[in-house]
Amino acid sequence: MELDEIQKRLLKEVADLHKVPEGAYNIRSNGQSIGRSSTENIEIIPREDGQGLTVKIKPGTKHESVHIPVVMTKSGIKELVYNDFYVGEGSDVVIVAGCGIDNCGNADSEHDGVHRFFVEKGAHVKYVEKHYGSGNGAGKRILNPGTEVYQDEESFVEMEMVQIKGVDDTTRTTTAELKQGAKLVVRERLMTHGDQNAVSIYKVEMNGEGSSSDVVSRSVAKDNSYQKFDAVLRGNTACSGHTECDAIIMGNGRILAVPGLEANDVDAALVHEAAIGKIAGDQIIKLMTLGLTEEEAEEQIINGFLK
Image (tube, rainbow, N blue to C red):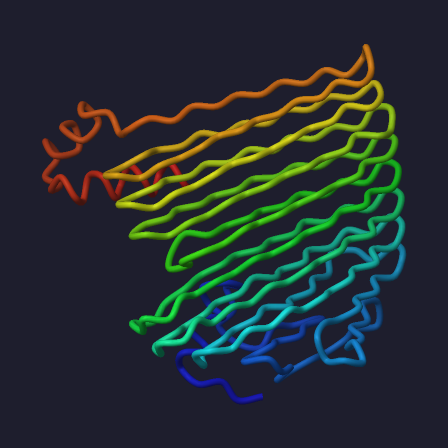
């Protein structure tokens, strides 16, 4: 597998990869797999149509990882990929996805991915998904990820959803169904600038007694960009849920937060929080007294907020 410098840079941004990873991986570039490896406990099987993967993780697998990043460096590509993950009972794994698009042409480049997770009893999954765009072309960089999570009893799924730079349009849709004692934790970090648009949708069904979910988004909207955070937690039994949107607005940015709670059981305990505001002037002044310019002060505050 040979990678050019742009591909290497994109892989570093979306998957923190500086070289071919150890363990199980599939690297997709411009619509094709350019490298794939399975392990004794993790099998990666390509779909017959070439548009996705089936990943099977054996029960009891511990301290292993799967990397499935996507990079696009050609203008005008549009693809839809389906990836299914079957996580065996009692396993503990990290799954790293993400997509980076470098578009220097005039045609739009778009990657839409549908990931489905079937997490068996007592399994623990940490899922990291990062999106990144670059390139000086007039064509857009478009990413529309869809994530479906199905959690068996006492399973635990952590999701880190990150988009910090360069994506022009995105609709991020995540749905989850939780059985007894299952736990879902989501941490979203998002920044938009220019004329970018970003919509984040979360729909969580807590169906099992003792299940819980915690969905938190931190975001920054700069320039003329627009964001929408739409999160609905449904408590269908004795369960607990929390959703939070914490956002900074700058310039002519616009943010719409729509937290939703639906309690269908007397013992469903659900909480939502939302806060949108600008950077406090005294914070900027304090940093400027330490020698930073106003622009540098704003950047430091945003970096700390999104960390």
